[in-house]
Image (cartoon, rainbow, N blue to C red; front, side, top):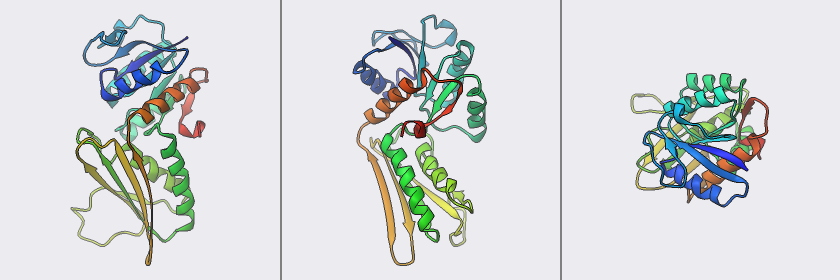
Amino acid sequence: MINVLLSGANGKMGSEVIEAIGRVEDFKIVCGFDREETNQNGFPVYNSIDKISEKVDVIIDFSVPVATFEILKYAKKNKTPIVIATTGFSKEELEKIKEISTEIPVFRSSNMSLDINLMASLIQKVAEVLTDADIEIVETHHNRKVDSPSGTAILLADAINEVLTEKKGYTFDRMQKREKRNKNEIGFSSIRGGNIVGEHSVKFFGESETLEITHTAYSRQVFAEGAVNAAKFIVTKEPGLYDMKSLV
């Protein structure tokens, strides 16, 4: 039996992970970590890592950056593999996670969907061919999402830059710019409203035609299932930084 610590247990994604693990053999959530202590799903949720006494084999984290770094303290101390599905990290915070991965196995992805990571591979191939295209990324999420642009939008832009000889800069806000579009940039647009789970479109604009690739998530369950698969993968791994490419 693999014992799981669920960070962000009281949130919407926490609920999805609870359901996903309930459908998996040999996986069990033994405790959680969140701001408010509860015991409503058959396991205790603690608001302090000092209160965790259960045997934990792997951590799944769907929280916020400040909580992620708190649970990372526990992971480092106990040499526990961790799946980080939280988004909104700064460059400095990502570097800290990379440093921590030299001590423990860390699986981090801005999006736990297999399809999104296949999309990233597809747009890389397009970017290698449509070298003169203007590239724009449009992402839409529910009205409770706090980070903008989404981590997935950055993931897609980073994937494009990986295959380009001349890297493109990122433009997040054109309101303050009174100038024509720079050819060497990737533009981002963020839409927030309602309860939409997530939609990402990458648009390649040419002089006479446009190619658009879009991914739409209809349920949060796809992210929960992806995180559980990542936990299965990483629980036996050596220290290092892993991502969805390890599973694709």
